[in-house]
Length: 337
Image (cartoon, rainbow, N blue to C red; front, side):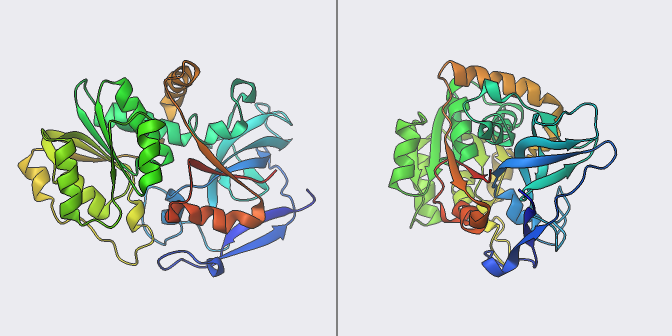
């Protein structure tokens, strides 16, 4: 590559992002600053969290500045190094951007990865990346499932949800998944080993809550929440006493001009339950631990993961929007080189 293509945020999306909110531009390849490196990105992670970073609102990370390339986790090779800890050609993972080349500075999130240990370098953006760590630490450390618990996973056919359900089964839980459409519900049962799959499409909160109640007559002990809105409410209406709700994502609301919020918090009080907001970065120092266990489960066939790899920088926008249409069939990754 002789230029650095960047997928730039040029205006704040209002509701669902449209192509005019972005621009694909070409700039000169950056040079490595003293102590830093330049990464040639090969695979880019596309995640619902990126939609939240596009808003000018307080969050756990600052908004993406207008005129900057959209922030993203990437896997790539060191193009240029002025840091003794990295050599040219070395594979690394880090929090960079949707662009061909990114500058990584000391003290950031960039770390070496061993691509000989995985089927594809993209695995470090899925099961062995933030997705896998979110499922692992979010469920085990925040949800604290016990053998015999009933675990409800929303957005269950997604990259995180499918792993959460499988880890729950490994802990001896009865696992119920909520997903959109017959095909995704089939995958929950046949591919990921869930005990019950519930299709949320075209159903009222009351109907959905009734189906959860039928699947969990003694109540839900752990609710791993990825969706929000009516889907979350259906679970909240079925909490067992002292249940734990892991609030990991609210994808149903990311494109809403106004947040919906919850209308049945009384149930949290009545059941003495807790809702715990979860951000995977809080466990960054323990990623080695989580990665080792996930790799072991993958090696012995206990854990299945799927990736939806799209190709081409020119396809960033339609690839990103697969997250919100439900078209992705696994962890969404963009291959650019």
